Length: 453
Image 1 (tube, one colour):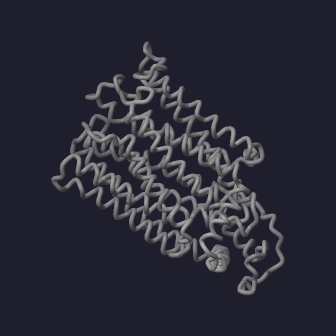
Image 2: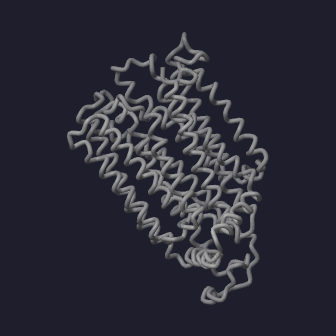
Image 3: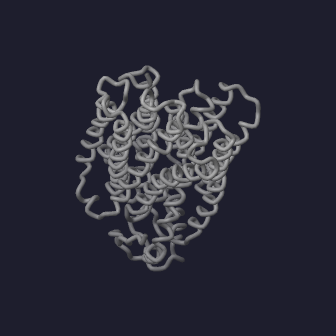
């Protein structure tokens, strides 16, 4: 797919990149030579961001796509609700500590990516080999969940780098590339898991069989390969002179700000947060709502409707529910490539929409057999498809509006404040994920609305 270059509106008056050392970082100007190279290598840079965030999210979606494997192997542990919680809280806490402790630049973007992806690869290896040891069900389950937590912490080291770097560019398309890469990872991941399962064991392979286990090992092996490829791609991206200029400029700005106290750092974040308050709250609510309702309610919708001994039960949650949401999310993010989408929605309208998405709660409860709102007692099979359709539409709204908010916020502030704005938007995203997954777990564990009964 060709990506259209959008010319920067930033004034230009420096033509020689060799003179960059003399360039004042506080200036809003970007050298013409840098803009020219960004234009020439626009597609390569765009797809590098696309792949890199997809690689980060591959770990997250690998854990989600293997829901049925975990549920069969460890039936006493509620993986459909615990997976996202164990992934997102280390992610959120790790990022908040880095950001508000002034540690977000302590390691440098290169080392952070190497550490992050190396840890993700290591968790994949541990998850693969843990099944070779004679562990009890509880020990094995919580070993997997602990690896999810390590993966989430590694995520907090690597992905924020991509959002912050993308926010340094003179238009929102690179941030959009990160967002689309995020969503594409979910689609490709669940498709890969499905294809491997079909090739190795076929549709009628029984849960817990050798074929299912082997397909799981191969699937998690992809995570290791993707992680090391991501390290290579990031090195290539960082060595592009125009990208290196933006990174060096941001580092010089940061070194000046590094002399300030934590109190001054926090004051700066609060100042920028006031400027982007509306999209900031909208971003949080988008992801809080999403992780509250996905995937727990959907994955429990097959209870009392599909025979637990049938082949279909092994396919409903993943790929059924997981894929429908992932493809909807991807569609929503791709819609943001249409120019009119960005101009059609304002910050205030996105704010209202972020709260309006809660209408999906009663819509999803209509397809949950135990719910008092269940509407398909005479057409239970259609009720299962209703959930898949609802999650597809839910994904479209989340993908589109979350992309608009995170691309909008950095452009509401000056160049010097864009890094802080991007950091705040990522914080809102992560906190929405973790608090939403926790609320979703509370719904399932306490059987609110009869979920899980």
